[in-house]
Length: 120
Image 1 (spheres, rainbow, N blue to C red):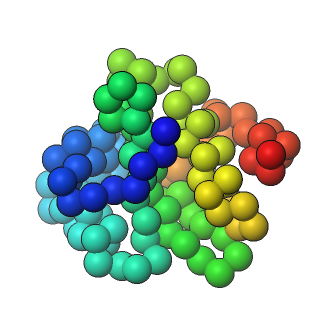
Image 2 (spheres, rainbow, N blue to C red):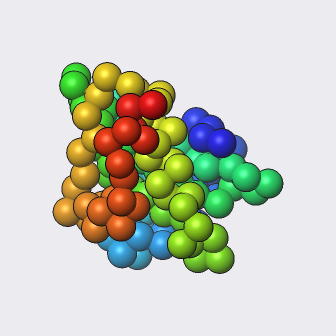
């Protein structure tokens, strides 16, 4: 289930985000968290099963959203949670195209998203 980030989830979110290669340095990680807290068009979501196991962060634009961050804890990788997060976001923002950055493109391509899944 996709849930919106709250400050009380900060440590969990930072831990998940730190799995991304671009977020290895503490200062960069802290700046990314500030971006989600301060920029109105940056939205951070967590994926919860029994526990929080994933994170996806987007930058909302008029006709699209760009996936800035996406991460799943290592013990749950390869089970489709990343794909589920993207599909859930396309349902949350049904009229917006999905874009990626140079850092999130490879992950999204591995998800093998079907156009029909994103528009259900």
